[in-house]
Amino acid sequence: MFCSDLAFTNLSRQVIREERHSATWSDKARNVSSSLLELEQEIRVLRKQMEQMFQQEQSFTADNVIEISSLLDLKINEYMKSANANK
Image (cartoon, rainbow, N blue to C red):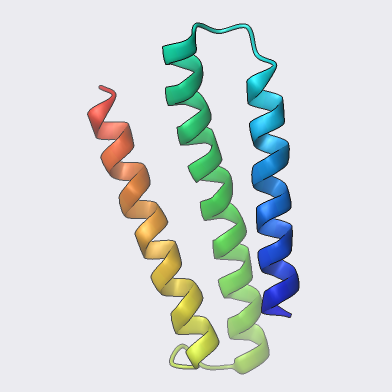
């Protein structure tokens, strides 16, 4: 299940990139906004995956749940750094 979800995450990233690429914003604004929007989408997908994996495993300490949770933490930290850097 995790592998297909990862493939979905990669597909989602590509769709977001294509949508943002066609936008008419300035290059700098597009890059910042696109990057943050992409991170937001990745965070949403990872959170949903983590919730589904928890429901399946019924454990917060299952390897699959911890793996997704760790990746989610990294993406949230990346988002926070990017958002603060662009203020």
